[in-house]
Amino acid sequence: MKRNETFKVMVKSGVYRIKNIIDNKVYIGSAINIKRRWCRHRQMLNERIHHCNYLQNAWNKYNSENFIFEIIEEIKDKTNLLQREQYYLDNIQDKYNTNPTAGNRLGVKQTLTETKKRVNTRRNNGKPWVSEQQRRKMKLRALGNKYHLNKPHTEETKKLLSLKKKEQCSKPEWREHMRQINLGNTNRKGKKTSEEGLNKLRKPVVQKDFNGNVIETYKGVLEATKTTGITGIANCLTGRSKSAGKYKWEYDTTN
Image (cartoon, rainbow, N blue to C red; front, side, top):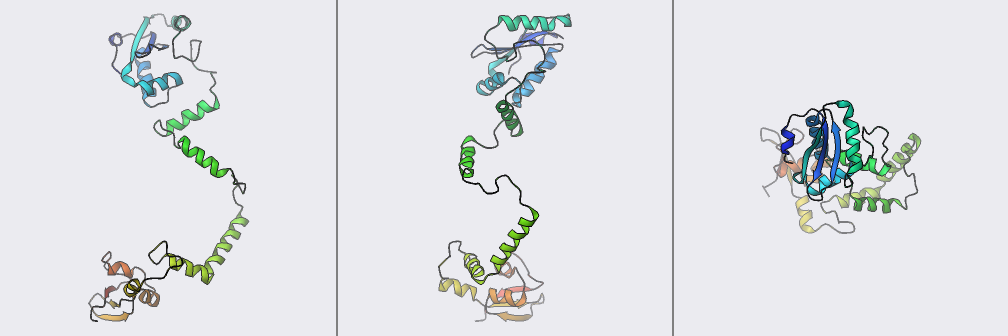
C-alpha cells in the first residue's frame, strides 16, 4: 500500500480512515499516535489476523495496493477522540466497521465460527490446515465408525491388542504371507518367483575378511544371512556399503 500524502504530516492524534479505492468502503478509527496505529493495522492485515473480518476479507481480495490511509481530522484534545470518531461512524454509511460504537473492542463477542476461522488461518499463514473438501471426506469416513470414537484405549485393552498381534505374527501361514509380500514385489500374493529371480537369490556369495582371505562361501544371500545372522549383506553386494558384520561380501565369480 502506498502511503497517502497526509500521512507524512506528523500528527500525534486524530481520526483516520482506511479506504478501499475499488468500492470506496472505509474503516473508521481514532488514535493518540496515528502513525503507530496505522503500522499496527497494516501488520495485522498482512498477517491475516485483523479483528475486523470485513476489512480483512476485502484486503485479501483486492490486495494492499488498492487501499489508502487518510487522516480525516486532526485532534489536539485527546479527550475528544472517541466523540469525533463516533460522529464519523454515525454519518458514514458505507464502512467496514462492525462495532457501531466508538471505542475499544472490549465486550464485543464473535461467533464460534468466526473465532475458529481466525485461529485456523492464523496458525497456517492465512490458509486453512484442512480444505473443505478434505473435511467432507473425513466426515463421511467417520459416519459409520461407532467403535471407540474419540475414546482412548485402557492399559488392559492395549495389552490384549498387543498379545493378539504377537499371536497372529507367530503363525506360520502369516509369516509365509509376509515373506511372499517382501520378496521384492508388493503384489506377489499367490504368485511364484520367476526362475530368473531365483537364480539371483541363489547366486553364490563369498565372505571375506579385510585382508581378502575367504572365510566361507554360501549358496546365496538368504543362506548367508540365516547362517551368520548378519544383516546388510545385500547392501555390500550392490555397493551401497563397504562391509556388513565386520566382513566384506562379494559374489562368487569363480564359477
